[in-house]
Length: 141
Image (tube, rainbow, N blue to C red; front, side):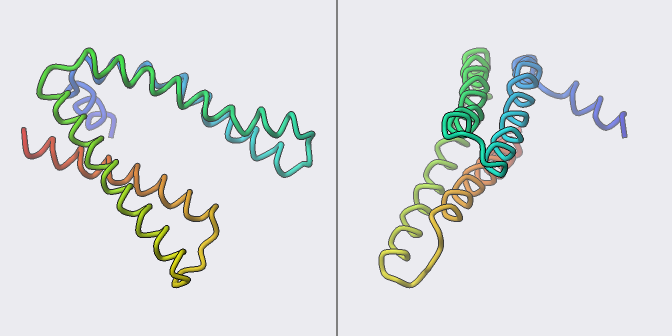
């Protein structure tokens, strides 16, 4: 198994390797803040503490986004084209899903909670990005 991981790591561009390394701390901070948010929400902590822990994951994600922007700056032209294409496709797919959800809710056809809609839209965004990015890498490889 480690041979596969090593070959995969070595097949990555230097910019992508730097991005993955730079994402470790923000990713761990995101996970930690998400766990703390869950703890604060479930144990009835003060409103201030719940607010701070609710916004903590957002700050960690912003840190990761800053690393992603550095990665885009360091990419070669083809890699940047793939990344920007994946982002554009994922944003468009998610926008369409959000519009469909809004209109279905407005028509009274669906009875989803806002919490479920938000969670599903985040999932649609992430899955669409990963799938389109993989497709573009295969297309241009």
